[in-house]
Image (cartoon, rainbow, N blue to C red; front, side, top):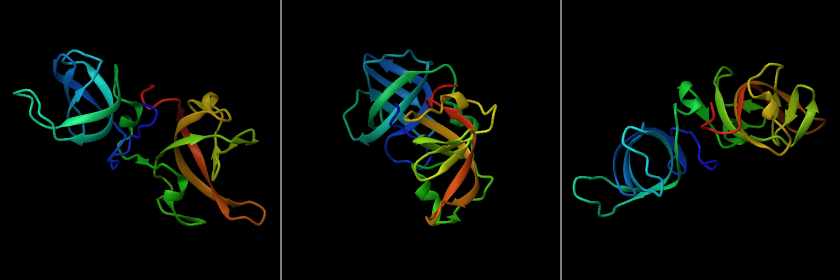
Length: 189
């Protein structure tokens, strides 16, 4: 499930969730937020169970009578007790990289108050409150939920907001984002 995004615009490898509608052996139907999914899986959650599913693609297939729809290919399925934490932030913008959020170096595309969900790996520590995330910096104030999870080399999901740009020596300015929350998983509370 770690290869999934929570982007509402993703067309492959995206995370969706919902209750299982019905089950017949390894075939289950899930009433997801984005679509209804019929999947084959070794996991066999009972109808009514809340599940998260990592969707890869769909393909026409012959399904048993009464199932209707399309068979979806998935990368993973997990029973969950509550919706994934990004669902609590309905206006979240998901980006695979910071470069997607800039028109050019030093020009931020979104309003500064926009909450962002970014998969990220810290490459080092700049000082006590700032971390080098490769092409950008992350400020983590004391008391930020999940701050202890941000260690060099660890892949994390960062909920952050744009703060400002800084110039490094003679190089191009790097964006500095302010952490709101840090998580090890999209599914973790």
